[in-house]
Image 1 (cartoon, rainbow, N blue to C red):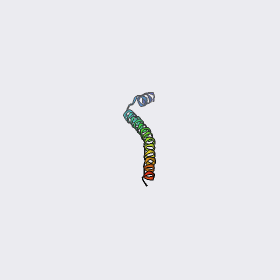
Image 2 (cartoon, rainbow, N blue to C red):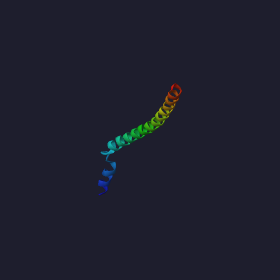
Image 3 (spheres, rainbow, N blue to C red):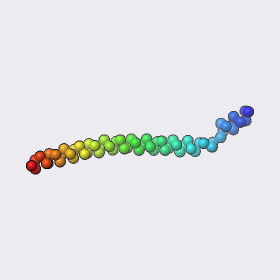
Image 4 (cartoon, helix red, strand yellow):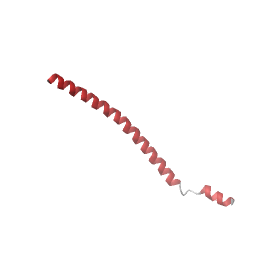
Amino acid sequence: MNSRLHKLFRSERGQDLVEYSLILAFVLLAGAAVYIGMSRNTQGLWTAMNGRLANANQSGS
């Protein structure tokens, strides 16, 4: 029984799957953070452009 437990704890069969899952989770979290940051910047850009176009439209009429 003791040797079975020893073999169970020494086994590395699922180690690669866990490591790749952790790497994938890190990449996904980093990508989500970049996406959220870019969406804020993009929203600010579109708001500024919309304001400038509205001003140009009013002064041109």
